[in-house]
Image (cartoon, rainbow, N blue to C red; front, side, top):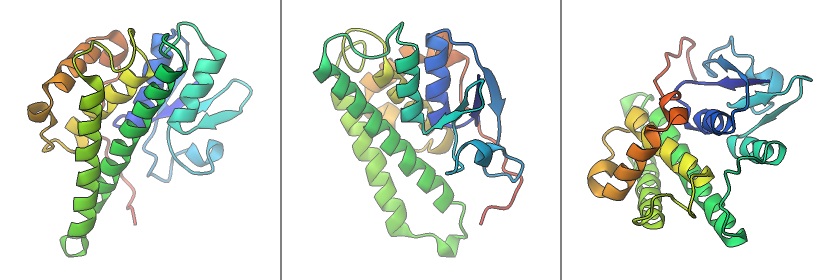
Length: 211
């Protein structure tokens, strides 16, 4: 089994962490999905990472769906809360919020790569509001508990931890560390886990011109 990943991607990092937490062996294939040399279109018609490729050549893509597949095929240890369906749904909601923040950060990143006179201040402000609102929601859900949802580490923690570290890579001026000390404490606990320590995001160089 192979995972096509990009080093800064919080979406790919979620999958890598889940595979590590479940001790599922896989081969990591690192690519820059924006470059013409990427093999991503062979396995994902949407040309997005991550992509999980099974030994028979079939593939699944979109990080939340990949995580659902992993949980279905390798249910132990479970990454879903043990407290019942309401807790499971709460964890899934955290995933939605975290992915929304990541999506907004990606849009901000590319908007800032446009020529200065072509950038939209309104567009940038809208994406920043999404990031700010999402972080406020995550901090409210986290509260003072050890984990985001329920009594054990799970998908909600993976989603939250990866988006927080992604901000440090792509949106370092966002003052979440000053605003939300509970998220700072949660991030520190998560980054100390071997699965997080082995997947620290780093920027990549895009060699092809992006238009």
